[in-house]
Amino acid sequence: MKRIGQNTLRTKVINKSLVLQTLLDWGQISRQQIAEITSLTPATITNIAGKLIEEGLVKETGTIEGRDSRAGRKSVALDLREDTIKVIGVHIRLDYIEIGLVNLKGQLEQRHNVVMPPNISETEFQKLLTEKLTNFIDENKGISISAIGIGALGLVNFEEGEILSAINLGWSHMNLSSHIQKKFHVPVYIDNNVRAMTLAEKMFGQSKRLNNFMSIYIGQGIGAGLVINGQIYRGGITGAGEFGHMTYIPDGQPCWCGNRGCLERYASEAAITKTLNNISIPDMLEAANRGDLDTLSVLETAGESIAVVLTSFINMFHIQKVTFGGKLANEKYPLVKKIREIVNERSFLARQEEVKVEVTEMGENIGLLGAASLALLYGVFQSQQN
Ligand SMILES: [Zn+2]
Image 1 (cartoon, protein in one colour):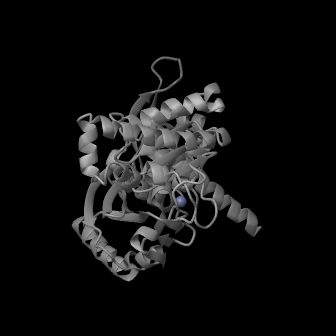
Image 2 (cartoon, helix red, strand yellow; image 1 turned 135 degrees about the vertical axis):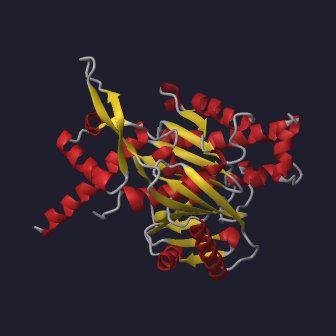
């Protein structure tokens, strides 16, 4: 009997989450349309919608034309509320800690950047983040915060809420989520930052209606996140998605990971700036913007390297789309364009059915929106309360 009870609760949570995600995907729609899209019964939708309205997550908002061809039939539209429940996203980067306030529609309402102090220890970092979050919440007095999501660079154990290692910051085994949860008394979720960005693409980005896609972030390293059958893929305890450590040249340059010839030794921001005589990133972008041929050629070569590895990957997992993030993921540079051309030319599966290669529409906000999407999905959409 107990087992049936648990299943019923699980089903309720799944159905609630499905209705909320459908409202995110389609905007203002009627109960009838939600029933058609989700294949849930109209009675179930009426029941869930009633509860969501009561909880302040959903509102009725005027009428819309029904799909019924008998002209004049209108139905009441439902929409997510932007004004009630909010979450906080925290993006831990090498150079900054980004903190942002995000509403139920995935809109970033406020953001604050804190410079990451050099050589900061795990304990000092926890103290600093607690202090900055306290200030941020004080500045937003009166706003109900339902959950906090944290996207962090490095290897993260999502289940345990622990940063296993962040080599560039010298951190290991930091159980950040339980520390923050104790201070702020709301659920806290932490995952690798690129996996979190992939979740944001699934929840409110350009891949929101896709079930199989990938998101790649080109920064100092190259990380990736994968959605398979509509679910984020997390692999083992360290997660998955170390795209930058896939082999590009078997006997190539040694990498800090212990292997040789890893892709990020050739195509990350760090590798590109090194090839251009250790130019700074702003100077490299400026050179690319004014059409400097050497810079553009290095970016094109980096695109070719990424495309070679991505082609192998696509022959294994014929995903529908790959979105790119990071400063170099911009259509005005030749990098993503080159990747698009090569992947669809070299992958025999992509030649049968094109793989879309795009630049993320979230731009510089993708890290924060990724972190917030963890809070929204697990702390609000899939919350077992009520
Ligand atoms: Zn490596």
